[in-house]
Structure formats: structure tokens, C-alpha cells
Amino acid sequence: MTLDAKIALVTGGSRGIGRAICLKLASLGATVGINYVANPAAAQETLQQIEAIGGKCFLARFDVANAEGVQESIKEIVNTYGQIDILVNNAGITLDGLMARMKEDDWDSVLDTNLKGAFLCSKAVMRTMMKKRWGRIINVSSVVGFIGNGGQVNYGAAKAGLTGLTKSMARELAGRNITVNCVAPGYIVTDMTDGLAEDVQEALKAQIPLGTLGTPEDVAASVGFLASSDSNYITGQTLHVNGGMYMGH
Image (cartoon, rainbow, N blue to C red; front, side):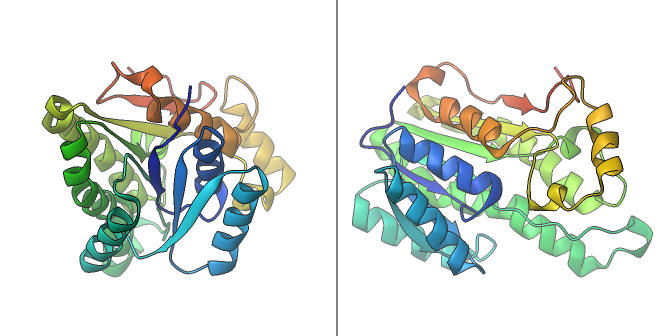
């Protein structure tokens, strides 16, 4: 499984699951664009980690929810590298709260970044992929988009929306040999889960048949597979990486 000579762009690539995806794609030989917005130090750290393993990468600072910024940045990447072969729509935010008290702005912000951002970035890279008649678009969803979660109606709606976006894009782009798939992580070890009390962590694990939280690397491995030629005949699918917490069809 190799991604030699491929150019990849990972949105929200500066930390957590995004960083693990960047490292995985770079380890497979791709030149990886690390997209970020607000944390240049974290993006720089990801870049250094990739360079430390002998990988190739570059930084790409833009807000996925800003249509003009997305178009300009992706045009610049294509002008520099000639193509974008792999797009991973990973950028996401949370602004949690019960629906009865949720501000409209909190709904809009989460939908704009988590769902509209994937639409804008995918639309911007499609042309170069269609010209080459090869491409991989991978959307990072969440188990919350399938089972729901109290206090996350905005996040759950956005992540569920990614599933419909994935299937419709897959049908539109299949004729140009571009596959579009989704990865839906369950509970993954992150800075946020590390801060949870031990009894809360144990309660989370009790919901998972495999009895443990996943790692960013578990998610990244799935993305690496879907980005490669090993997944040539897979499109419009959601790969659930959740330890059996949700076993959807």
C-alpha cells in the first residue's frame, strides 16, 4: 500500500485525529498539506513530526467555512504541486448545548465548519481530480451522526449530513474514477477524553464491546486504506471505527 507521488490535503490536520491522519498518509509516501486555522504552533509540530519520519509536507492555513479562502488556497496548492489527489475532510468544531437553549449562531457555526466546509473543499478539489481521472475524498464523520447524543444536535446533524453528502458525491464522481467514502470514529483517546474523570471514562468503555477507547491511529489507518489503491472498488461507504459501539449496516 503506497501513496508515492500523491498530493494529499487534510483539513484540521494540526492535532488529534487530523495529525494522526497526516502522519499516516506521509508514512505511505504522500506529500501532505496540513490545514489549520487558529493554532500555528500545533501545525508546526505536526510538520516537524512528519519531517522526523522522513515525510514530505506543507502548511495550508485557511478556514474551511470561508468559500473564497478555500478556493484561493486550493488553487495555490494546485499551482505549486500540480494536483491534489487525496482530500480528507476532517476539520470540525463542537459548540455543545441542549437544543432548547442553543443559540442559532452555535448551530450555524458547527454546520458551516463540519458540513459546509466539506462541501466547499470537495468542490474546490474536484476539477483537478476529474482531469486526472483519479481521486480520493474521505469525510470524517462520527458515531454521534448515527446514534445521536444529547447536547449535540448541531454536531450530530452535521455529521449525519456528511453521510448523505458522501453517497451523493460518490454517485456523481464515480464515472471519473474518484471514490468518496466516510470514516465514522467512536470514542477516541484525545486531550478531551484524557481530562475526563476515571469513572466517566469507565462508563464510556462500558458502552463499547471491545472495552476500550480507540486511538487517533486507529482512525488514521482506516483513512490510509481508503486513500490507497487497495480500496479501488469501494465508494459511497461509511467505515465505522468504534470498537463495536455502533454496528450499522
